[in-house]
Image (tube, rainbow, N blue to C red; front, side, top):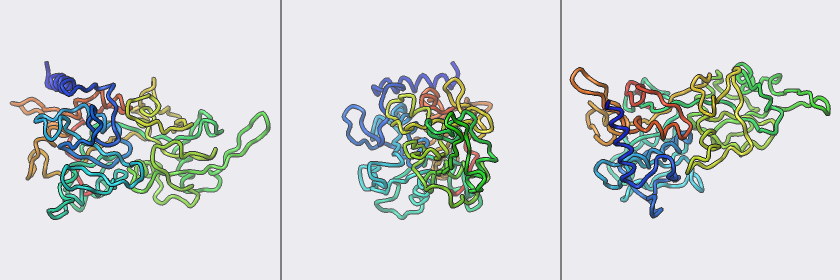
Length: 365
């Protein structure tokens, strides 16, 4: 049996020992004891991306803490939003009541602030940030490492009852013009049994700090969106598309999980459907099309110093996120997150093989 197989078996055994199912257990918005429903503090605390919050919750239920302290589960993943954003969250039994970070950038900034904070009630409150983007500052320092763990892709969502749901979708050039508010790109005329109907396009974007917003604008080559952008919305929330002309970027993995009755994932897709981009379908046989034009890795961002070979290595954090490559004398040690391929795929993401758990991508934020 190879190393990866042994780790998968161990993960399944650990989940069974916890009384958990990799597929049936609900993933709570914030860490709770699955038996009592009470808030549960765990060893590794993560915040940030809306895109990966649900799979983060699922991984939190599936991965056992090797020393069973302070919980039988190792990872605590706190959602990007709560009942009244920005809801404060409490991440440790003592102190650590902090504003809930909403989005990749907010999560990374919260981790940076934690690292820079003096000893006190808001120090050592966060261990990692969920991010759906790579680093945007690779020149200031290498203080953070962006550890990839899964594949996602971003497409455009429209209302199913809109004429924009035409089965054709958009090209990158069209999306560039739409989000730059080029007038000719903001109307489409369709032939209907009642005669020609013109739709005025009303593009939407996710909230500021969203990794999906940053990634999508980069892919369509837009630096500053035009004034026609019809406000900003919480990412991957199809209920925000209320007008026939609305369109918005949407994580394909999130959409799959939301519409797939995955336990613990709220269905926020409303009446939206995913469109093609450059003629490419977002899903193949119901699964993420990893060859989609706007495919991306998603990350867990961790302090570089706490990784293998760092100045303050953390065995729990290393075992959870970092894959240690094989040497001529030692086998590879697969990160616990990377061993959870079934959980990753259950939440709509694609797996990335040996790239999972790599530590070559570094930056400050």
